[in-house]
Image 1 (cartoon, rainbow, N blue to C red):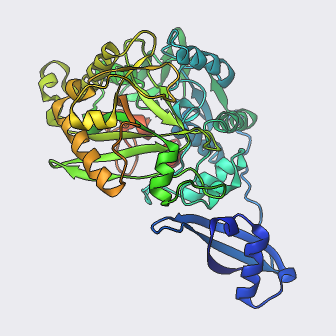
Image 2 (cartoon, rainbow, N blue to C red):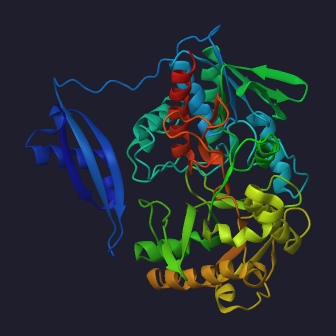
Image 3 (tube, rainbow, N blue to C red):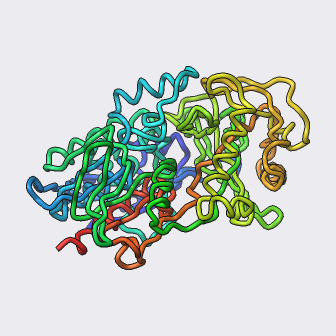
Length: 517
């Protein structure tokens, strides 16, 4: 059995494997040469005091001791096996497909957008302020929104499944093994496309299908049971349908509603993207003039209650950049991401406040359960009108936003299409603007210098979650009114990020296996 020890080291020491191996040997009372393998199982940074420290948890294997086997996943051939339609190639759809293969079912994975290389061209066009393809953008295409996301791998849920199994699957498909032990694992937007392609290759090589440019236009329902979907003139059938379409596939909610399939309204969160110079965040968090070469770009996680509503940071991207996450030219929607090295001179985060069902109750008489969806769309359209040509987004300096004054000019930004001065404090819904203003003041007391005119808020961050839930039975994970329909992931209202969506997809695949005779 390996011996487990924890070391508290200076950042420079934690970066030197030879150094911490010698310390581990001394702690165990053995020679360095007796250590056959030393493995980091967790690494975290403690920056609560002026001197940051790194906590390393290590597994130490000595000579003659059996070492851990490399994690391997076996995907049997499912050619000719019972087909299951999986709609959406985001984390929920991909991991559902992999698990279906392990369980002996053949996934037919449908993606409305294009494969990665073609999708990159469409995204480059959006970044230049050009045409927006509603089926190929930051939200849609091979891998879904996850392909060009920041790639943070964190979940608070311990109930959906094996968190480590999901991480190990990502490593098996090409992710850096460091994600297995980092306290806040991160892949990076530059690495994710390669991993997504590998997962799709695994699905195909096992006998499954991955079909692009297949936008679902209707459902095939017979006698209260779904038997497949319609994509234009094409009918694609299977023993069950896994619906993993993500929170931006609004046409799916409208389709389900039109077909009389029950949906539920749910609260959500919306707000802005906030961007600081990364150097400023480093100074605040590490209590030093600069972070030096051994510490990563600093991050933060902030939450408060203001006027009875939660206000919090979301999807914090150190060393990252803001991107146009719109899916229609009539919208202004922003999101954030980081490359694996987190080398950008900017740090950004979603800054959002709770949106309650009562906030869009005025839309219910006309839109019913889809009122929250319309509320999202109206705010995105308003932000678009406040922006400029192309994908230029409305922005305001942070100190000006808190003080309630116009910004005559704006600092440089990572947002490639560009920003234009706008009074976000005036046109955001009043409860939202006031909540964000109060939240920023609270956060500034915790992180001195957080409210500054070196930073900006950019509108709008509207897709942290979906305002619609597709209900499912708690045990069977199947829609209670439509046999064979298995909603999963963020779009169905059951996840909130890459890992939670992946684990939810795996759980649904297991439920499908129990359902399919």
